[in-house]
Length: 213
Length: 185
Image (cartoon, rainbow over all chains, first blue to last red; front, side):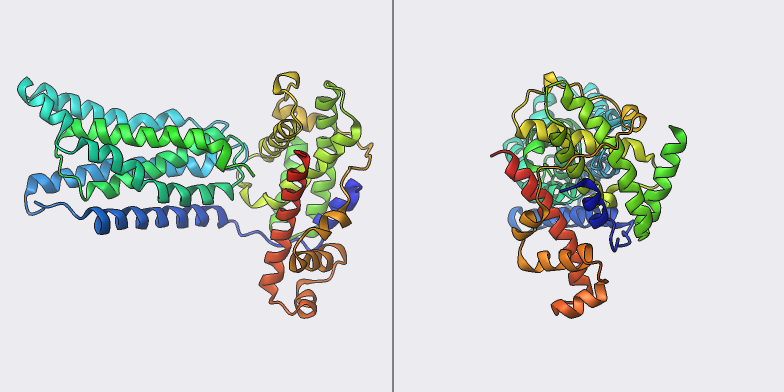
């Protein structure tokens, strides 16, 4: 085939492109991800008890705020990074900010608590459940986000995969927060932060396989 | 350089709004630049000009089917370069060449040179089209090769207009997929 023949073919009856298509696709994927994570938490794990207590409610809000903060910030970057060449001039280091913030809060909290409480504050009651639940709940959200990112033709598959994993982990953590009864800042910093980071790592590893186009 | 970027970007944006002539001019001008880029890369590992032409065509198809991912407020050159480079890396992987042997160049380079000495690629469009599902093949034949409009094609194929548009788009994506899969063999 001659290249001018190809150009003639591609340049015949060119359709108008919907400019909002990319944002809409990623929006649909994140909405699906949120529904999946909420569904897992509400229907499989069950909503936590003790929500008539102001302390428990505060922690629920804090966990959801941390997780959705991660999701909101990462989504903004993902929309850039998932496009061809989007990895240029996109300073993803800012994405560690929510993690740094929660770790500082956790450190302050520990500093003001007697050392005999530290073990309980860090390890909590259900750390194993948290460690398993957040990555498992993240699977369906991750699949939805990968579906969207593939349509955006990423050229840095490791980075795009990592951000897809980070969004999925954040959405999953927000869902898990509805079930989780470990109410301490160090617990959230370590187990929420750690499992979301794990999802990011898995996303980076799977990116080159799943995101090829 | 800067005026080249501005001119190509204007063509791209007009193409996104459905201007066929602008889109065709854009692809034509990019093909010269892509050819210079790929020939320079492949010459270092002793590959032929026809292999460079294969890549030019793959990159053009990719630029066409992925054009919805171009953000009009940003520069066009880095977007084109990212696709060109991605297709080169993918090609080298599929044909099992070590990436270390081929310097990938940078975004400025791709706009710096032009090469209009085209050869034929190894791809046979008729053979590739014959591998597509009937619906996609007919949609591409009528709309993209015979130049019939979507309304007329929809009537002839007994499909809705939006189904014709979708079939054309999916068909071109499927062609790119067939080309990529055949390489590894």
